[in-house]
Amino acid sequence: MTPYRLDQFSRDVVNPQNALSVVSICRRIEMDSALIGWSSNIEARIQAGEVYWDLACALRQIAEGLRPRNYLEIGVRLGNSTSMVAATAPNVSIAAFDLWMSPYAGLDNPGPDFVRRQLTGVGHRGELTFHDGDSRETIPHFLADHPAAEFDLVCVDGDHSDEGAWTDVTNVVGIVTPGGYLLFDDLTHPFHTLLPIWRRFQEEFGSQFEFVENLKDSHGTGVARRKE
Ligand SMILES: C[S@@+](CC[C@H](N)C(=O)[O-])C[C@H]1O[C@@H](n2cnc3c(N)ncnc32)[C@H](O)[C@@H]1O
Image (tube, rainbow, N blue to C red; front, top):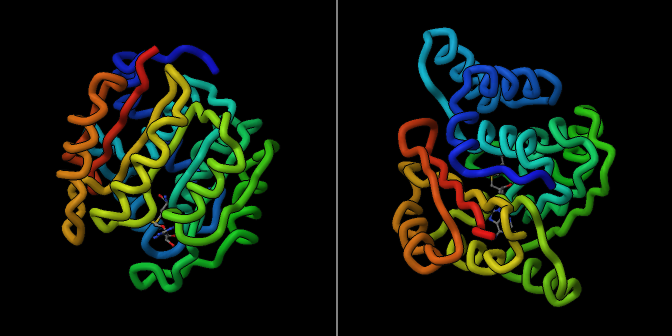
């Protein structure tokens, strides 16, 4: 892992080249209609000279700046967000947690074999483990089995209920490496109410983390960096 300050991240993440790199990684994976629409929108916004960043942009940029040794993701679906990290830091060791709820919001959710192919397709060479089931159970089981676990990069994008998201984020807060990052998605999603959960997280863990967020693009993304 390379030291990567939050102010540097804030400057880098808005570089149009970062968003264009996200689009280019998308072209190397299998996308469904929702992802095709999302990546076309990014491209259009950048071509129009707008500033844009979301979860995928943040993950790609952190993967480049931080060079994480390992990555824990809750909520994988087609492996789009996972691919951003895997393509940019190909040796990263990935622990992927998902319930493979299908359909998910009306979309296909084919499961681990599909995601494994996606990641191989973007050049991932590191370890990849899947932890299938409800993260309220699989995360505590994983942590009980790996009491010394630390992750340089963590993304919480699974259960979008208030209670489920709070459980996930508080279950993983202690395993973020000092200097590492934790990301939380869909703060402003119209079908969910996760912004107050993010605010509560900031209040309770503000002494341990520093934060940036973008409530303007996509459905809102929160970024927390653990202080050293
Ligand atoms: C929004 S999608 C993840 C999208 C992915 N992070 C990306 O940006 O490409 C949410 C995923 O979380 C999973 N999920 C929902 N509730 C869950 C739970 N309680 N435990 C584990 N996974 C869950 C769903 O199956 C779905 O695949």
